[in-house]
Length: 100
Image: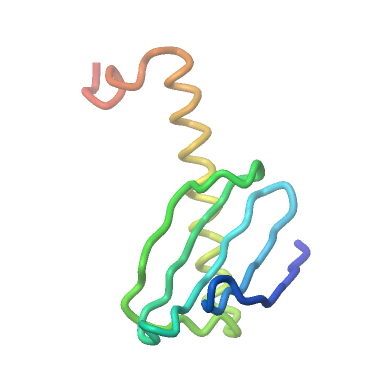
């Protein structure tokens, strides 16, 4: 698994991008106004936003354990997204949810 880290500024916000080729990617963002909150976004391989969440603490993304957990969450989200899309195509999403 190759890790590419890019640093940059977007509208005065500090953003770190972590890319995992062909599996999507996740980003973390810390706003200068809310330095105690980390915004985490997960994207699929088509760069579509899958999920985002504001975490009420600073995540130390230099730690291997944090990166592994974010990557595992990304994998889970992408797998669930594929399952939901398959059910949607079969028009069985509600039937599965209702257990029928």
